[in-house]
Structures are given as structure tokens and as C-alpha cells.
Image (cartoon, rainbow, N blue to C red; front, side, top):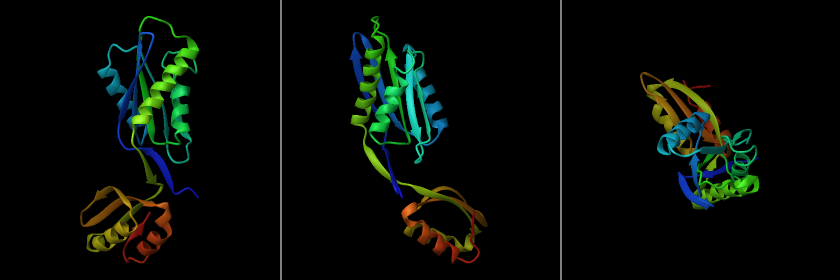
Length: 197
């Protein structure tokens, strides 16, 4: 069973030039498709004179959520080579956008494939790869009086806390590393007055 996955730590950037055209490669760590939309909008504002914003992403540890977009370039000449670089690096939760400024000379499909692939590969080459735990997501509901007990168990299990509402009655969303799931759930089940959803 797979317990961890590889992604990148922070945004990375590289540039590739071919016959006057400039290809700006941006790699981003992402969590959702909404992240993709927001990052694309930001790049389009930043690079108003660029002609193409080709991208690819893969999200999730099952690898089933992905997309490759040629953004007006010949079919298969941009998005697929970019996605290929994400996959050959064994990464997920990653978006790569290659912003192209046209230099006046047509590169042809093989030239485009090479340019997009190189810009994507170069951006990943300068990115910091990190390994993260695959997590089991849970929602906990409990009375404020047992919060310390709950937090102690989550801390021992190296759980990530995503959302926390603390009133008299608390609601908490957490992710438990799969490697610690059984032990953590068993300990949480022992806490009286705690509801696991």
C-alpha cells in the first residue's frame, strides 16, 4: 500500500528560448482545480502580451484527476509533453503552465513538443521535490472540555488539521497519515463524547 506521494514545495520558474519564441515554465504545488483556475488567471494578467498559456496538472494520490491543455497550439504539441514531465518525475498535486511569447518563426509540431517539454522539465529541475503522507480525512465533533485529549492524539499521529471551529461544541477536520490511521482511530474511539464522521 502506498503511504506517501511526491509533489513540489513551492513555485518554480524556468525559461526556454527557441528561434525568437520565449517559453516561460511555471511549476506550482496545488490541491484543487480551483487552484489551477486562480493561478492561470494570475499568469494571464501578469503576461498580457503572451499568445499561449499551455498547461497540465495532476491532482490526488490515485492519479486519476489530470488535464493537459494545448491552448490553441496544434493538438498534442503542448499539454501532453508538459503532463509527460509531471508523470516522468512521479509527481502529483502539481500544475505546470508554459507561457509562450511568439517570436515570429513557426517551430512546427516537433519543435513545439520539444519547447514545451523542455520548459516544463526545466521548471521541475529547479523545483524542490518533497514527499508527503497520504492522508485519511476525518471530521471530529466534540465538547470543548475534551479538546486537549483530542489534540494530543492527533499530534501523536502527525495528523494535519485543515479546519477548526472552536465554540462550546467543536468541529475539526483533519488528515491522518495512512501509516498511523489504525492506531489514531483506535485512540480517538476511546475518547468518551467524541464523534468521528
